View 1 (cartoon, rainbow, N blue to C red):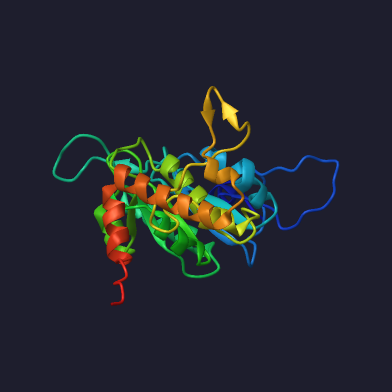
View 2: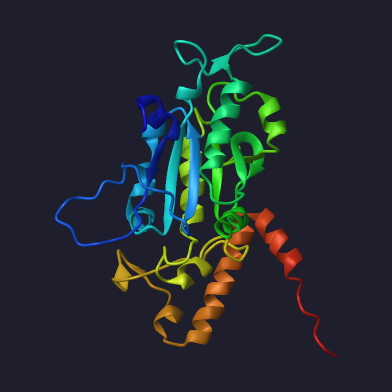
Length: 276
């Protein structure tokens, strides 16, 4: 029998095992069992009410509802110390702010890992970490899931990172109040790569960063808008010429806006030497 404290320690899970017709609205916030074959994300956070957030909407929300993936949260607060469930303390050696305690984090991390059906990446969302990119999203999507620790305050006790050999990952070169927004962004980028989420697999193959380049410009109706026309080649019906135009535009935009990506792409795709 679960007590109130037991429920608090197990956290919340989002996602369904199956779909069936019903006159009762479904509840993404309710407790669900761990799905055996579904890709699973477990988020350790002080604000579990922030989830699923935007992940419960649109394509990722539908995939969550259909059981293509599952999202769980481990609330950090119930693992806190003392009457007030304190999760942080002052930095050793002095300094501003507060640091999340090692003993509190250790208990929460062990609980989160126990919820996973197989070994998964254990990630700490940190502004000093490796920058998240499409390659990392593909790597995570290819496995059974991920466990994410959302930092708060001045960060977490370094001993926790060392003990669990955590992977530190950053959303970009800026600082957020906590890791929850970064977690949702990274999960969105990862979940959309799971089989069946996008519906059309070609959508994921023809996007910015999927092949190391930024995406070419896109157009749709009307043909002329405010005096601006769709490039004639896109209306020609000549698929070979359209492909060449899109490739050239992707190269141009990448060279102009992200020279770092362009140089990396050139290194990976050196020009073929012409035969004499």
